[in-house]
Picture 1 (cartoon, rainbow, N blue to C red):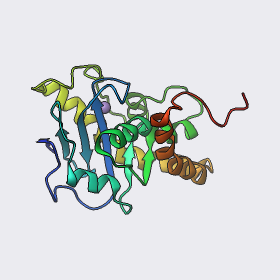
Picture 2: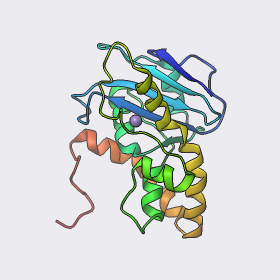
Picture 3: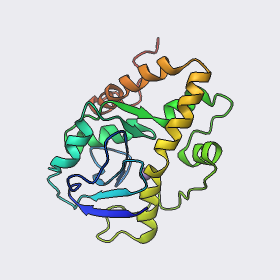
Picture 4: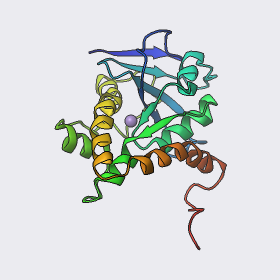
Amino acid sequence: MSVYLHEEDLPEGVLADGPVAIDTETMGLITPRDRLCLVQISDGKGDEHLVRFAPGSSYAAPNLRAIIADPTRLKLFHFGRFDIAALQHYLGVLAAPVYCTKIASRLTRTYTDRHGLKEIVRELLGFDISKQQQSSDWGSAVLSDAQRDYAASDVRYLHALMAELDLRLAREGRTALAKACFDFLPHRALLDLAGWPEIDIFAHA
Ligand code: MN
């Protein structure tokens, strides 16, 4: 149960086979403007790996890119739309296949409008995670212990959340609908990057 910090790429062979949880930290919410600073990744076995990118990075990261693009490996996100766009923009690789715990939460927890990671981890798993470092300076030369812990906690629970949310999707008869949404999600991220960030192309007007 450790958090590992790496520079510019993930070392080879540190992840077990199977689904990986991924999150990103950036300088802000405007993807082309606000550079990608950190990619967190976990195989769900207890360790989290943080890959940090320096200002002016080439974002070559061949090991990380190979995992993100691997069609045999499911990538788990919470609000993947943002992370997938950031990974596409900076690393030049489109994550697929993907699973998004926020979408699964929206399709099952219809009794609430609270679908933040902190809220669903608390309700479904009974853990309390801090969101205090969410808006901190991820471009800093030195990441604080609090920042590392926060970054790691954003990928720590996604495997367990998927297991619980899959049960609820099955119970409510929405497994296939969720799968269709997950399959579309990388394309939704591409629409964001291509200039349709807030426009609903399915809307009548
Ligand atoms: Mn995060």
